[in-house]
Image 1 (tube, helix red, strand yellow):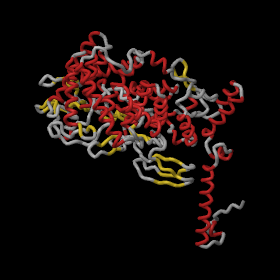
Image 2: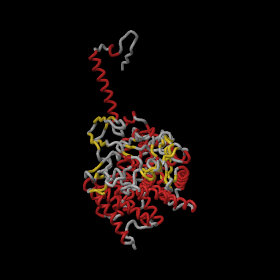
Image 3: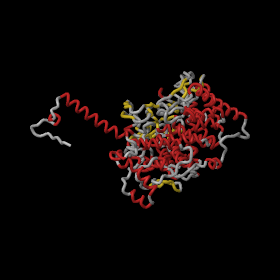
Image 4: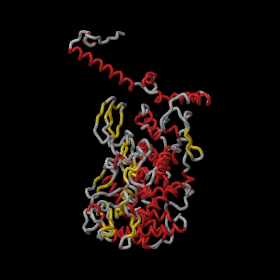
Length: 633
């Protein structure tokens, strides 16, 4: 090979060859094409190619080599060999989609998810992570293994679970008075009406638009469809709407495709460049390749509506299709946790696994109500799959929250997933904060009262809320204010009205002195939320209500006067009824039913309204999925 140098007083090496300008151009064009061909060939080579190993980092192929070596060697030699291999960094520090081996792992992960309805595969010989005695134990591994290799031999015993229930899931209620039964049948008719119109005009879409009689998809679910179907499943089942439940189940079996829905099918070797919130562009390789181009999926919404709905229905019915879909979808959410702290970002692309924070979130922060509302579902994903990774992700969130200092013992709503520090000192029991507290007390109850960490976090948080946020108006109404860096904002959102039921639920299991105090607090907050309904012309509550400028439990701003079929107030009615059997809570609930029928029922479903303070309200043309999942339930 001849090495040409540029010597003093001599032209550069292309000129030294006596090339003219057009020839130089052709020569450089040929050289760049050759380099491009060599670079492309690297990625066309099969995964097992020895040539590929020359160019890719050793860590990308270590997993395969250590696994095959372990199957043909003794345990001692395998252990010795592992110490010579490079260690994988923590999962939180390495996004899966950034690893050279990520495409292969993704294919393996998707194939595994499709088989999750059956018994999980046995732990691979090279794996170092197992579940023993209900706890996860991590040991050094030669490389980050695919998710399927971390599951211990396991199968959830559904029949044993059903035998352990203290109350039947469905069935008659002996001694029920005729009026109560008639009211129950009325709500069942409302559910059937809402479902029938969704099925007729919007089946497969996320929500029904009842005025225009069509479907709404939205951009909150990243390409997933059928939010109303998944959300409504368990309500249809417990209301014993058999035919409607079978319709919903059939849609899940045949049409709820987590990988193909709204994807672009590309032939071999096509370059694709597109604009979006992530600015993704690049080359796609496959035969053919499917890419989800829908973009933003809310980690929180996908978890509570899709995974929550599927898990609830699986526990009610034992139908494997609901479990397998929940596990498959849960795997797609895991890349959101790949941050320096393990606190997940709020938005994820379900196709690529890329995640980012909401554009409106302060300084790229994650939201307390979003990353704090994963525990219940993720612990059950580990329970059903035998894979500890889901539980480990949410337990790490607790560790971060326990480590960070809480101002006045309160939990602000914005936390940086990079530093693990609070971004703003805004505290709310309504939007941005609400269900974090709910999941703490319910995690403790779900654990058969063994999760003492969750209980302590709940007790400490409620004590700080009582001390700093609970206030009483001049008219004697108890409410929970918002806190902005030490300054109180005397408003309460409709979303915060769930707290009456939550506090009552926690009080039932508290010490005697605290039980009485908390039950009184729960009743007072629920009464205040009822007043926000009673003081409106429609007898439906506004999105937010205030306690200032001489106004109490009423919206003072036009932007807060709407009602979108929310469940939080009637949820507290239900909890208080169950725990006290005071008939006023059933009476208040029936008032809501009558108001819904009068102001929200339209020809083809139920719609939210834009102003609760007028008896001729304007409808917003949206039947929210949570109306079927929660409000009517």
